[in-house]
Amino acid sequence: MLPLAKAPCSHDTPEIFHGLGCLSISVVPVSKPRPPAAIEPQRPLWPPGMVPPRPPSIVPLGDAAVLIRFESAGADDRSHWQRMAIVERLTSDPIAGVIDAAAAFDSVGVFFDPTRIESDRLISLLKHRLADIESLPSPPPRIVEIPVCYGGDHGPDLDAVAQHAGIAAAEVVRLHAAAVHRVAMVGFAPGFPYLTGLPEQLAIPRRRSPRTTVAAGTVAIAGLQTGIYPRASPGGWNCIGRTACLLFDPFREPPTLLQAGDMVRMVPIDRAAFEAQSATGVAMGGR
Image (cartoon, rainbow, N blue to C red):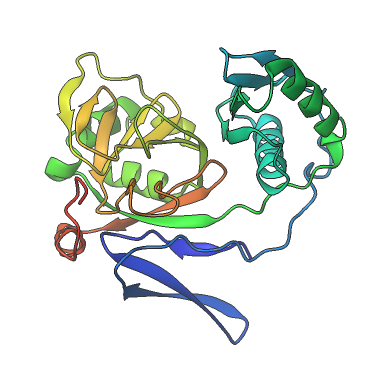
Protein backbone atom coordinates (compact mmCIF):
# COMPACT_ATOMS: atom_id res chain seq x y z
CA MET A 1 0.00 0.00 0.00
CA LEU A 2 1.28 3.45 -0.86
CA PRO A 3 1.38 6.22 1.75
CA LEU A 4 -1.97 7.97 1.81
CA ALA A 5 -2.58 11.44 3.15
CA LYS A 6 -5.42 13.89 3.14
CA ALA A 7 -4.14 17.28 2.09
CA PRO A 8 -4.01 19.82 4.91
CA CYS A 9 -6.80 22.36 4.47
CA SER A 10 -6.11 25.59 6.31
CA HIS A 11 -4.70 24.40 9.68
CA ASP A 12 -5.65 20.73 9.40
CA THR A 13 -2.86 18.19 9.13
CA PRO A 14 -3.01 14.41 8.75
CA GLU A 15 -2.13 11.97 11.49
CA ILE A 16 -1.45 8.47 10.18
CA PHE A 17 -2.44 5.47 12.25
CA HIS A 18 -1.95 1.76 11.63
CA GLY A 19 -4.45 -0.74 12.93
CA LEU A 20 -5.69 -4.19 11.97
CA GLY A 21 -3.45 -4.11 8.94
CA CYS A 22 -5.16 -1.05 7.46
CA LEU A 23 -4.15 2.56 7.05
CA SER A 24 -6.65 5.13 8.27
CA ILE A 25 -6.52 8.92 8.42
CA SER A 26 -7.55 11.27 11.18
CA VAL A 27 -7.41 15.01 10.57
CA VAL A 28 -6.28 16.87 13.68
CA PRO A 29 -6.12 20.70 13.99
CA VAL A 30 -2.63 21.95 14.81
CA SER A 31 -0.82 25.27 14.55
CA LYS A 32 1.13 24.36 11.43
CA PRO A 33 0.42 21.59 8.90
CA ARG A 34 3.14 19.08 8.24
CA PRO A 35 3.39 16.76 5.23
CA PRO A 36 2.98 13.01 5.74
CA ALA A 37 6.17 10.97 5.72
CA ALA A 38 6.65 8.24 3.17
CA ILE A 39 6.18 4.82 4.78
CA GLU A 40 6.90 2.38 1.99
CA PRO A 41 10.36 0.91 1.29
CA GLN A 42 12.14 2.00 -1.86
CA ARG A 43 11.44 0.02 -5.00
CA PRO A 44 13.55 -0.61 -8.13
CA LEU A 45 13.67 2.31 -10.52
CA TRP A 46 12.61 0.46 -13.63
CA PRO A 47 9.31 -1.48 -13.58
CA PRO A 48 9.39 -4.98 -15.16
CA GLY A 49 9.53 -4.81 -18.94
CA MET A 50 10.68 -1.18 -19.08
CA VAL A 51 13.99 -0.66 -20.87
CA PRO A 52 16.23 1.86 -19.07
CA PRO A 53 16.94 4.96 -21.19
CA ARG A 54 20.33 6.25 -22.18
CA PRO A 55 22.23 8.46 -19.71
CA PRO A 56 21.04 12.07 -19.76
CA SER A 57 23.09 14.96 -21.12
CA ILE A 58 24.30 17.69 -18.76
CA VAL A 59 24.74 21.29 -19.95
CA PRO A 60 25.37 24.67 -18.24
CA LEU A 61 22.35 26.82 -17.44
CA GLY A 62 23.69 30.30 -16.72
CA ASP A 63 26.53 30.74 -14.24
CA ALA A 64 24.88 29.11 -11.20
CA ALA A 65 22.99 26.09 -12.55
CA VAL A 66 23.27 23.11 -14.86
CA LEU A 67 20.49 21.28 -16.68
CA ILE A 68 20.21 17.51 -16.83
CA ARG A 69 18.31 16.67 -20.02
CA PHE A 70 16.69 13.35 -20.79
CA GLU A 71 16.32 11.30 -23.92
CA SER A 72 12.55 10.99 -23.64
CA ALA A 73 10.55 14.21 -23.89
CA GLY A 74 7.52 14.96 -21.78
CA ALA A 75 6.20 13.44 -18.60
CA ASP A 76 6.08 9.75 -19.58
CA ASP A 77 6.81 7.01 -17.04
CA ARG A 78 10.40 6.51 -18.16
CA SER A 79 11.35 10.17 -17.87
CA HIS A 80 9.39 10.54 -14.64
CA TRP A 81 11.13 7.74 -12.74
CA GLN A 82 14.48 8.91 -14.04
CA ARG A 83 13.98 12.47 -12.81
CA MET A 84 12.69 11.36 -9.41
CA ALA A 85 15.64 9.02 -8.88
CA ILE A 86 18.17 11.73 -9.72
CA VAL A 87 16.56 14.28 -7.40
CA GLU A 88 16.48 11.65 -4.65
CA ARG A 89 20.18 10.88 -5.07
CA LEU A 90 21.22 14.54 -5.06
CA THR A 91 19.08 15.14 -1.97
CA SER A 92 20.18 12.12 0.05
CA ASP A 93 23.84 12.32 -1.02
CA PRO A 94 24.45 16.00 -1.85
CA ILE A 95 27.42 17.44 -3.66
CA ALA A 96 29.23 20.21 -1.79
CA GLY A 97 28.18 23.55 -3.22
CA VAL A 98 24.88 22.33 -4.66
CA ILE A 99 21.93 24.35 -3.33
CA ASP A 100 18.93 22.60 -4.86
CA ALA A 101 17.73 20.13 -7.48
CA ALA A 102 14.35 20.67 -9.11
CA ALA A 103 12.55 18.32 -11.49
CA ALA A 104 10.70 19.62 -14.57
CA PHE A 105 8.86 17.74 -17.34
CA ASP A 106 11.93 16.36 -19.10
CA SER A 107 14.86 17.73 -17.12
CA VAL A 108 16.32 18.38 -13.68
CA GLY A 109 17.82 21.74 -12.82
CA VAL A 110 20.76 21.62 -10.42
CA PHE A 111 21.47 24.96 -8.73
CA PHE A 112 24.85 25.65 -7.13
CA ASP A 113 26.97 28.29 -5.44
CA PRO A 114 29.66 29.27 -7.99
CA THR A 115 31.93 30.47 -5.18
CA ARG A 116 32.07 26.90 -3.86
CA ILE A 117 32.13 24.80 -7.02
CA GLU A 118 32.71 25.53 -10.71
CA SER A 119 30.27 24.49 -13.42
CA ASP A 120 32.73 22.17 -15.20
CA ARG A 121 33.63 20.45 -11.94
CA LEU A 122 29.95 19.97 -11.07
CA ILE A 123 29.15 18.52 -14.50
CA SER A 124 32.03 16.06 -14.13
CA LEU A 125 30.79 14.97 -10.68
CA LEU A 126 27.21 14.62 -11.93
CA LYS A 127 28.28 12.42 -14.84
CA HIS A 128 30.10 10.19 -12.39
CA ARG A 129 27.14 10.11 -9.98
CA LEU A 130 24.67 9.27 -12.74
CA ALA A 131 26.76 6.62 -14.49
CA ASP A 132 24.75 3.91 -12.72
CA ILE A 133 21.38 5.55 -13.22
CA GLU A 134 19.80 2.25 -14.28
CA SER A 135 20.25 0.90 -10.74
CA LEU A 136 19.12 3.99 -8.83
CA PRO A 137 16.14 3.35 -6.55
CA SER A 138 13.22 5.73 -6.86
CA PRO A 139 11.52 7.28 -3.84
CA PRO A 140 8.07 5.84 -3.10
CA PRO A 141 5.31 8.22 -4.19
CA ARG A 142 2.83 9.66 -1.73
CA ILE A 143 -0.86 9.58 -2.55
CA VAL A 144 -2.48 12.85 -1.51
CA GLU A 145 -6.25 13.38 -1.46
CA ILE A 146 -7.50 16.83 -2.46
CA PRO A 147 -11.16 17.66 -1.63
CA VAL A 148 -12.74 19.54 -4.55
CA CYS A 149 -16.08 21.35 -4.88
CA TYR A 150 -16.92 20.95 -8.58
CA GLY A 151 -19.06 23.27 -10.70
CA GLY A 152 -21.11 26.35 -9.85
CA ASP A 153 -19.15 29.55 -9.25
CA HIS A 154 -16.21 27.42 -8.08
CA GLY A 155 -16.06 25.65 -11.47
CA PRO A 156 -17.56 28.02 -14.04
CA ASP A 157 -16.17 26.06 -17.02
CA LEU A 158 -17.49 22.66 -15.98
CA ASP A 159 -20.47 22.82 -18.36
CA ALA A 160 -18.24 23.97 -21.24
CA VAL A 161 -15.89 21.04 -20.61
CA ALA A 162 -18.87 18.67 -20.57
CA GLN A 163 -20.16 20.10 -23.86
CA HIS A 164 -16.73 19.80 -25.46
CA ALA A 165 -16.48 16.17 -24.35
CA GLY A 166 -20.06 15.37 -25.32
CA ILE A 167 -20.96 14.08 -21.86
CA ALA A 168 -22.89 15.28 -18.81
CA ALA A 169 -21.22 17.54 -16.24
CA ALA A 170 -21.64 14.83 -13.62
CA GLU A 171 -19.66 12.45 -15.84
CA VAL A 172 -16.84 15.01 -16.10
CA VAL A 173 -16.68 15.08 -12.31
CA ARG A 174 -16.75 11.29 -12.08
CA LEU A 175 -13.95 10.85 -14.63
CA HIS A 176 -11.77 13.56 -13.13
CA ALA A 177 -12.18 12.25 -9.59
CA ALA A 178 -11.65 8.62 -10.63
CA ALA A 179 -8.27 9.37 -12.23
CA VAL A 180 -4.98 9.15 -10.34
CA HIS A 181 -3.09 12.32 -11.20
CA ARG A 182 0.69 12.57 -10.95
CA VAL A 183 2.61 15.74 -10.12
CA ALA A 184 4.99 16.09 -13.06
CA MET A 185 6.44 19.36 -11.77
CA VAL A 186 5.69 22.43 -9.67
CA GLY A 187 6.05 25.81 -11.34
CA PHE A 188 4.43 28.90 -12.94
CA ALA A 189 3.66 30.19 -9.44
CA PRO A 190 4.92 28.91 -6.06
CA GLY A 191 3.05 25.70 -5.29
CA PHE A 192 1.28 25.37 -8.68
CA PRO A 193 1.29 21.64 -9.58
CA TYR A 194 1.21 20.40 -13.16
CA LEU A 195 -0.69 17.11 -12.96
CA THR A 196 -0.66 14.44 -15.65
CA GLY A 197 -3.21 11.64 -15.81
CA LEU A 198 -6.24 13.55 -17.09
CA PRO A 199 -8.52 11.13 -18.97
CA GLU A 200 -8.23 11.71 -22.74
CA GLN A 201 -11.99 12.14 -22.93
CA LEU A 202 -11.61 15.36 -20.91
CA ALA A 203 -8.78 16.84 -23.00
CA ILE A 204 -9.61 20.43 -23.92
CA PRO A 205 -7.65 23.46 -25.21
CA ARG A 206 -7.00 26.48 -23.04
CA ARG A 207 -9.67 29.15 -23.03
CA ARG A 208 -9.54 31.55 -25.96
CA SER A 209 -9.84 34.46 -23.54
CA PRO A 210 -7.87 34.06 -20.27
CA ARG A 211 -9.39 35.36 -17.05
CA THR A 212 -7.69 38.29 -15.36
CA THR A 213 -8.24 36.61 -11.97
CA VAL A 214 -8.65 32.96 -11.05
CA ALA A 215 -9.43 32.30 -7.39
CA ALA A 216 -6.89 30.60 -5.15
CA GLY A 217 -7.52 26.87 -4.92
CA THR A 218 -9.16 26.66 -8.34
CA VAL A 219 -8.80 23.26 -10.03
CA ALA A 220 -8.48 23.72 -13.80
CA ILE A 221 -7.68 21.63 -16.86
CA ALA A 222 -6.01 22.28 -20.22
CA GLY A 223 -4.72 19.82 -22.77
CA LEU A 224 -4.15 16.60 -20.87
CA GLN A 225 -3.19 18.30 -17.61
CA THR A 226 -4.80 19.46 -14.39
CA GLY A 227 -3.49 22.43 -12.43
CA ILE A 228 -4.41 23.95 -9.07
CA TYR A 229 -3.94 27.69 -8.61
CA PRO A 230 -2.21 28.30 -5.25
CA ARG A 231 -3.11 32.01 -5.17
CA ALA A 232 -5.41 34.36 -7.03
CA SER A 233 -3.79 35.06 -10.41
CA PRO A 234 -4.56 35.42 -14.11
CA GLY A 235 -5.16 32.13 -15.90
CA GLY A 236 -6.36 30.62 -19.16
CA TRP A 237 -7.16 27.06 -18.07
CA ASN A 238 -10.72 25.72 -17.83
CA CYS A 239 -11.91 26.06 -14.22
CA ILE A 240 -13.94 23.02 -13.09
CA GLY A 241 -13.76 23.20 -9.28
CA ARG A 242 -12.04 24.58 -6.21
CA THR A 243 -10.31 23.25 -3.11
CA ALA A 244 -9.83 24.86 0.30
CA CYS A 245 -6.38 23.28 0.64
CA LEU A 246 -3.47 25.64 1.01
CA LEU A 247 -1.11 24.81 -1.86
CA PHE A 248 1.66 27.14 -0.71
CA ASP A 249 2.53 28.33 2.77
CA PRO A 250 5.94 30.00 3.34
CA PHE A 251 5.69 29.08 7.05
CA ARG A 252 5.36 25.35 6.27
CA GLU A 253 8.25 22.98 5.59
CA PRO A 254 8.24 22.27 2.77
CA PRO A 255 6.17 25.30 1.77
CA THR A 256 4.55 23.54 -1.20
CA LEU A 257 1.80 21.04 -0.38
CA LEU A 258 2.51 18.90 -3.45
CA GLN A 259 5.90 17.72 -4.66
CA ALA A 260 7.01 16.33 -8.01
CA GLY A 261 6.29 12.60 -8.00
CA ASP A 262 3.23 12.77 -5.73
CA MET A 263 0.09 10.94 -6.83
CA VAL A 264 -3.10 12.95 -6.35
CA ARG A 265 -6.72 11.87 -6.00
CA MET A 266 -9.52 14.41 -6.18
CA VAL A 267 -12.35 13.83 -3.71
CA PRO A 268 -15.66 15.52 -4.67
CA ILE A 269 -17.30 17.51 -1.87
CA ASP A 270 -20.38 19.73 -1.78
CA ARG A 271 -20.46 23.49 -1.29
CA ALA A 272 -21.27 23.21 2.42
CA ALA A 273 -18.19 21.07 3.04
CA PHE A 274 -16.05 23.50 1.04
CA GLU A 275 -17.31 26.47 3.03
CA ALA A 276 -16.70 24.62 6.30
CA GLN A 277 -13.13 23.75 5.30
CA SER A 278 -12.45 27.31 4.13
CA ALA A 279 -13.63 28.70 7.47
CA THR A 280 -11.49 26.45 9.69
CA GLY A 281 -8.39 28.62 9.75
CA VAL A 282 -6.10 30.45 7.35
CA ALA A 283 -7.79 32.36 4.52
CA MET A 284 -7.43 30.88 1.06
CA GLY A 285 -4.94 33.50 -0.09
CA GLY A 286 -2.49 32.76 2.72
CA ARG A 287 -1.70 34.15 6.14
